[in-house]
Length: 170
Image (tube, rainbow, N blue to C red):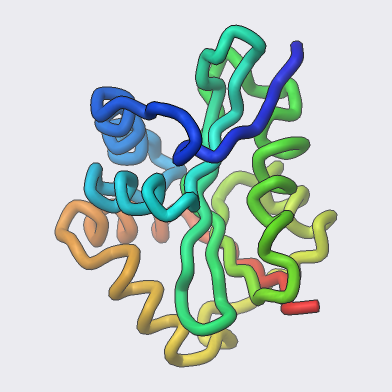
């Protein structure tokens, strides 16, 4: 399967598909909720990457976002079930998500064991949330979870056991 990674800003991502992404983040038990407005903002800033097949069909996505100063986050990695286990997320989306963040500190939270292993292979170290700089923790809450659906979903996911990872600036 030939797959290419594109920045969502470079294609005409319609509002119906943005709504589908938001709905997916609400329904999938491994994802943190992302509102339509948050996704639109990420797309407009060029922070949303898509995996496309040769016909242009969307197979999955990953979002990166600015947290604070030189701290960035990776979030919302998702691959449609029928395209899983082909390396779309592990082999393409995650590496492309961090490619242009060299020299930055990168934060990621994951419940999926396969994703955790990929992060470690890419140089991420598992950390406790309390090890992050205070302003990074505050900004994570303010930027990412400042809506009721997001907070409710966060508490549900946390009960499953998040693991937190950081790749330090190089």
